[in-house]
Amino acid sequence: MTSTSFESDFLVVGSGGGGLSAMLAAVAAGHQPLLIEKTDRLGGSTALSGGQLWLPGNHYLAEKGIADSVQRGVEYLEDVVGDVGPGTTTARKRAYVEGGLRMLDLLEREGLEFVYSPSPDDYPEAKGGTASGRAIEARLTKRSVLGEWAPLLRTDTLLPLPILMYELKDVELATRSGAHLRRSAGFAYRAVRAKATREEYMTLGAALVTQLLRTLRHRGVEPRLETAMRELLVEDGRVVGAMIDAGGRRSEIRARRGVLLASGGFGHDAARRRAEQPAPIDGSWTATAPGDTGDGIDAAVGLGAYTSNLDEAIWVPAPILDGKPILGAWERSLPHSILVDDSAQRYANESMPYMELGQKMLARHRDVPAVPSWLIIDSTHRKRYPLMTAGPRITPKKWIESGFLKRAGTIAELADQCDLDPDRLSATIDRFNGMAKVGRDEDFHRGESSYDRYFSDHTHEPNPCLGAIESPPFYALRYYVSDVATVGGIVTDEHARVLREDGSPIEGLYATGTGTASVTGRIYPAPGASIANAMIFGFVAVEHALDGIGASRPDHRPEGLR
Ligand SMILES: Cc1cc2nc3c(=O)[nH]c(=O)nc-3n(C[C@H](O)[C@H](O)[C@H](O)COP(=O)(O)OP(=O)(O)OC[C@H]3O[C@@H](n4cnc5c(N)ncnc54)[C@H](O)[C@@H]3O)c2cc1C
Image 1 (cartoon, rainbow, N blue to C red):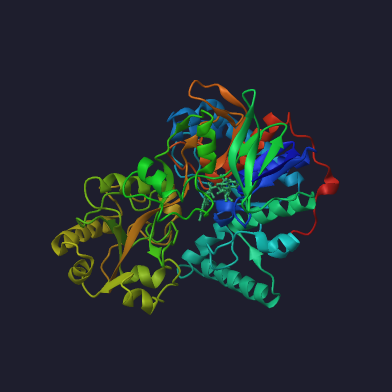
Image 2 (cartoon, rainbow, N blue to C red; image 1 turned 60 degrees about the vertical axis):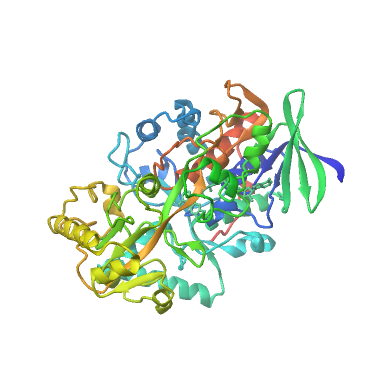
């Protein structure tokens, strides 16, 4: 049944980072956009994410005395991303870096609060790369600032404590120095204090989304939840709105200046993942939000949009516990660990950036079963470092009893439990131990990049990523290829306009985020590059569709974020 139509300036489909930044840009400039969200929660994958924004040349860097510029940011993207399809043009790379700074200016004028979040670019040694990092992240934010919207926020626990992303290093290395331990104790105190005051502190992506929503609420935006875009409306070759479905009722939303598809990727579309992505990927191990089912891609393709890089995702090698991936870059990078395939052989630098390691696992799997692989650690690792959600020395009994974590007194017994060839596994470990002792991984160069060394134990010598696997008991854990986003999809230009194969734009139609062919192509260049990609091209779309962003009035800034 179709009911009457509703009129707006601009229709934004999806309430993740891409949709929310577009909404903010539009309302701040005095327009009346409409936000629809398919699920009953706001925030999409963005609210579940690490929450960093990678913004080369941002002012937080300058305040720390770190030299950076737009030019260096573009140079870096050119070097590491290259030209891997129509999403990765130089014009789009420049639009990302320049648009990112304009967007940050708007977010701060609107009262969002960030801190510098030091962690290196994924390829710091590349041209234009940096080991200092260029990411920022939202400050800890009280959930209560959302008022009656607080229950509408999509949340899940990525970190067990109210800490910022860059503070995780202290927790990982709490047993390794007094300074890390003291700071970790401070986080525990922060958690206790929060509990005593009954305040729920949002961090990471949930903090970013909380701050965005708070500002939108303050500006009088009324998002429509459980309202799905079903198809796009076209008149005279121009997109003028969409058919929506809210609780089985279909209606038309007319959008004078166009439609932005910010409806996420296709993490949960098993059929498309099987068809487009490398085996054995089918979406079962994805960490993306449940609404990411590729609706925007379908709608745009229906109008003749071109797609690219559909086989790609931000892969994150991870164990799966109770059906959920436990994401983290630390345990496989820290010393006293290796990753082996079913032939008990190493095949990659375990400390490398997660997207690239996932690509290596999938490539290896074509020749030797490697998905899942086995992460093997010894008891020195277990004594010194956290393992997923377990603190150092505390190994949950049920992990062992359920077989999730294998434990054995000898390498041969461990191999037996994992169905690996014991002689092969011993030979692999002997070779690795020899290289660890001299601090040089001749096979895969682990620990040579400052990225590798950041995610490792700087107190460990001679190479912070290499430690022998020699202290029993030994442990093994299955590692799958999870993902936090699909990054191929609709091809867009530097204004976020949706393009046909001949390069012409579909008038009135814009797209951003994980449903588009990312400007970062087949690589994850730095922490926060994916969230920033979604938010920047949402912002850029509004600049184009609504003819520039006006200066927001200071009296709209909400007070008292923390
Ligand atoms: C656990 C996790 C950790 C991550 N960590 C990082 C990180 O540290 N750094 C980084 O850069 N990236 C990270 N990512 C990836 C990052 O979150 C995404 O790339 C980015 O946030 C995507 O934003 P988006 O707006 O494109 O999509 P989303 O945030 O997924 O939002 C899309 C929204 O659209 C809605 N929607 C879908 N279809 C429709 C429809 N038909 N009608 C209406 N609404 C619809 C969905 O329900 C969803 O709410 C992480 C992701 C996850 C899951």
